[in-house]
Length: 633
Image 1 (cartoon, rainbow, N blue to C red):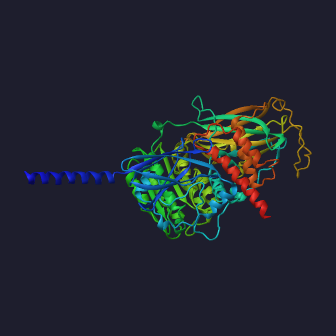
Image 2: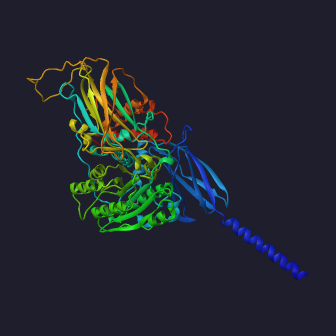
Image 3: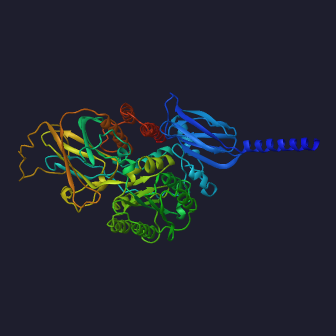
């Protein structure tokens, strides 16, 4: 009996010990919300979780549109959360995670002074990516160890700045009486905005030629109506006074592509072409590439196919074409990538297109996604030769999208041209938040084309408009005769994407100085009935092709002379004013950062992802840099 009692006690103690150990081993989690000083929810905040006493792994996540965030599967113990968003600051938050429990936190962020923001951005040390690997567990959770995001400078290894941008000359005034037509290709690239943000987050003024105003404007979504009657686009127009010149007017032309329900998204044949050369070692390059593509992977389906091609001194197939539903295999392949060697981009491009061609999906999406800093240094390195290579490959029906990464040696000019020639888009990824926007929130537009070779032609009425100037799109201009030429390549438009163009107009009767052209001797002013219409400002014509078509279709709308500052025009004008100031444009007139901020705040409207609020903070950062630069002179 005594022996039985002893055995019973031992058994009970063992059970209790095992239960205690089990409870200690059960992971907990942290959930929370981020707000500003006024209590408004803050999306897009980068949150970094550390606990040196428990684990060396650093986890990073981004708050969603409701300002919410979650860290899952955490060993019990004490953790520190730091938060980062351009122009804001907060003290580190200490959190105790209990076994099997959920710790709830609320983080408040306040506006940082300009000097404080600059100091924080400059103190960030260089990151050795060898000590910040992206573990598989972190990637699956949507985080990558050691990454920095908006509000934190991403410091590169390069001691010398060899970034390359094509020179941009602002569009000049054009007299309507001499040239009434303005023709250009649409542009849905947004790389310039996130690149400008990167500079401002590092307390640097961006180079003038890094600022492409049309890409700043098109970074934002606008409340344009969905297309009707089976058309792929809706066309929205508006005219109001130009904020920087009360004698002038500002005209908006907005296109909205139809959105696609997820059930109607066609099968996707994707090839990730990843630069793994030595220049991609930095934490804001290959590790961020892994994190970016890891965010896309869980959103693919069994209808999709994914392959991974890498290139350095040579090219290789890391992942043969695999079902999009095999997320684990895709993530494991990404996690194994390491950087080293020279950069033979042309060889990788050829292999990626060949893999895409081998698994071509008729009627589906066939696309190569190139991730690189654009620094090609062996093989075919000439920008023109690379562009011609892409032009040859695009005839196969396979598009090219380019995701740019890093700094110091960023070859913006090369990447923009490759995407243009490849009938794709160029994005600059400076953070996981930007990757989320491009590859998850806007995946339809990024990956699914609803119309190709989209061209705009605007005819101005000389009775109401004396002169016009297209703001931006300098490298997208077309000859007027190209509009009706279906052999002339132009930009493609993805599902759900919008395109906005602004014209500054000089009303008829206003004096404008346009030098260099003498009066014509033999030409007579037109007296057609169209010229006599005083209630029309311009006519907008749009040509496009269906994705599988070779002949274009035409849409046309007439724009009346009545003026009204709509929310879409107001916010786009604020962005244009911001861009002209960054470029120190000769056409900026009375523009100021204060006026741009007032306009942006007035027309901020619904901002579910926080992009417009972030823009207002960037205006403040640019104004702070202006004051700082003024004190140095």
